[in-house]
Amino acid sequence: MSVINKIRNPLKELQVPFVLLLWILLSGFSKNIPEGSEVFAGNMPEDLTKLSLEQLMDIKVTSVSKKPEKAAQAAAAVFVITQEDIRRSGATHIAEVLRMVPGVEVARVDSNKWAVTIRGFNDLFARKLLVLIDGRSVYTGMFSGTFWDTQDTALEDIERIEVIRGPGATVWGVNAVNGVINIITKNAGKTQGALVSGGGGNLDQGFTTMRYGSKMGDQAHYRVYGKWFERDSFEDPNGVDSNDDWNALRGGFRVDWEVNDSDQLTFQGDVYDGNSNSRRFTVLAPGVSTIDLQKEDVRGGNVLARWTRKFSDQSDMKAQFFYNNEYRQGPVFGQNIHMFDLDIQHRLPIGERHDLVWGVDGRLMTDELKGSFALSFNPLSDTNYFVNGFIQDQITLIPDQIKFTVGTKLGYNSFSGWEVQPSGRLLWTPNDRHSLWASASRAVRTPSRFEDSSILNFNTAPGPVTFQVNGNPDLKSENLLAYELGYRVKATDKLFLDIATFFNVYNDLLTSEPVSVFPPVISSQSQNLMKGESWGVEAAATWDAFDFWRIKAAFSWFELDLFLEPGSQSFRSTLRNGNSPQFQANLRSRLDLPGGWEFDTAFNYV
Image (cartoon, rainbow, N blue to C red; front, side, top):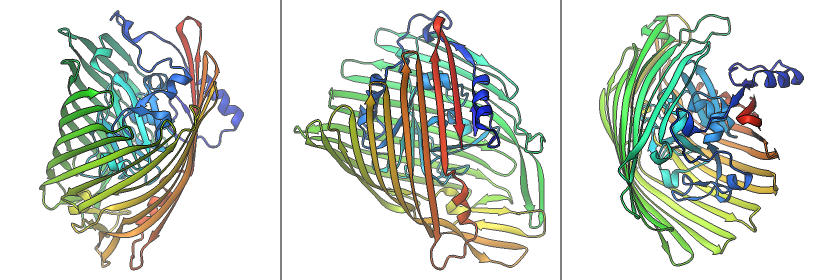
């Protein structure tokens, strides 16, 4: 249980009255200054701010089907975080913003690391979640996860965050297994003028964002931004400094050019540089280990170009290319990764009942690695690729009431070969207040470079025995069959409810199987010898108690059972069963006061 803005440790011993008192006292007043006037920058249109309940239901998302559709009528468990939600959350990092979403698990590992997942299997590198920024994948194929410390774009520039709970593999491809998080930033035309924001405290010792936007001729707009922060160390449960402080500096740009009535071009990019500290237990040689302070340097950048041609309100074509570089260097491990990605998609109606979307994409990843006795790779340099094609058709069975969406993704990758990921979704909207949906999907998570070719040495305690885990180039993809059911209702003009249930069946999950059990080195190898089942319920509610007071609530209940296949001798793999909370809930209150003042509070329970 935690109270926002900044209490990170569980407080389960607190009684409810005291918690409610803290909720009030630790929440702050703030004065709402229109974004365009923060530094006398002129007027700017508001983006998804101060929306009525009716307008919130009409927000359109693109992450479910790669085309615009109302979130309240999407055949998937979708949750939209608006810019207003971000600003009034008090969060200073994207990962912290995600705590408000039902079914999303956010764990703060230390001052500079987060573990984020959806519907189970949480880990520092949650392997079944795909994260995107403006359609650019930030999922790293090195460890099959996301480095959240480098996903730190300016929060003020985010228009919305679309969170899909459940598979999105039919349109997004491999690794969109348990969910998709798509962070969508504002068009440059909506960030004109200057903005400066900042703050500081005992942990967030100092942070600031500066941004400037302007026009380039009559048809183009641009913005540039810079962001810096310095964060102090956490303390361990015994009050000892964890020495995990970190700092970073980043900057970027975006240009949006309306070439004509049909064509639009977008160019954007980011660069960053930072370093962080941590105390780690490192194996130096068999039977020799140490606990010391380790520093990690990170830097990188990305550029993206996207062309959109609009043929009509129901038909368009998009082509997107991006390049991403990520460099990390610490005493145990170093990496320099280059990623090139090209994506083309086309939407076109066929008759009055079919809305077809199809596309192809390819990705090339090259890496150069540096290892140590604790973690090494063979080979130290490699190239991997993914090639995919997808097609999806939304069929109108009964106009304005029943729609059936069917599609599949077919792809080939250098880790596991051919993969097929189909899905079917049914939506029934009897009227503008109710919608009921159901889906069945298959998704896969391909092996990572780490699981394919790494050699990991570790000790469970200082002593003469070293445990070794070896990669396996013959691994298969982990796969999921997911069944979902959801219901949304505008119960009154002031109350909106969203409920989703799911049942997931996993096969070919990874285990660590013993190879040699004789000291001083006890070795094992990754195998696909585990299966599992998970199920749960997620709900979210929005209540406009008054015109000036909005209350949002969310909860999720989750169960996961993992089973070793016959022949497995693994003893470590089932430990992941306990990484996810069974129950989560949050309550947020937003109160608009006279004179532009705001009083916002949030309450989380895990």
